Length: 135
Image (cartoon, rainbow, N blue to C red; front, side, top):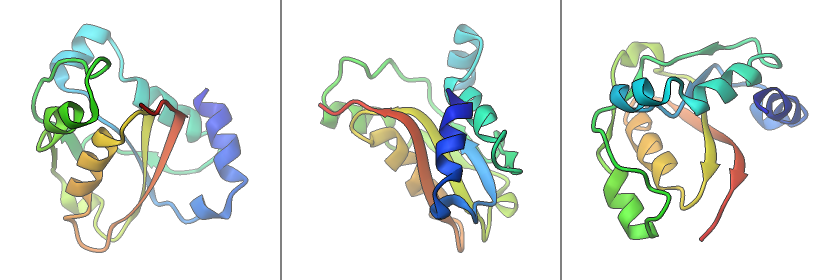
């Protein structure tokens, strides 16, 4: 599905100047439980159409949180706010970042990630997801 998303994104001029692809990170414990990060797998498919690196080290999830699937918008935001941190800032400074997630429900996770990334000088963020599942 990431390959198909990359194909569709490539049709738009909005993504031609991306510098780096960053999948929404999972907490290390959650990734170990699951065995993979679905956003990273989607990002890998996108790279079939963009000759850009995937950066999985600059944005990290700092807290292990429960699943958000049955939470309302406010609960989702409080569950993810301040859960992400940026390290290795020199790798993303002055970059156009394609932030990749699997599904947007309320946008809380992407907003929390973007808030951290935008603390870095001259960062531009675009978002790509496979689906929108509004409340």
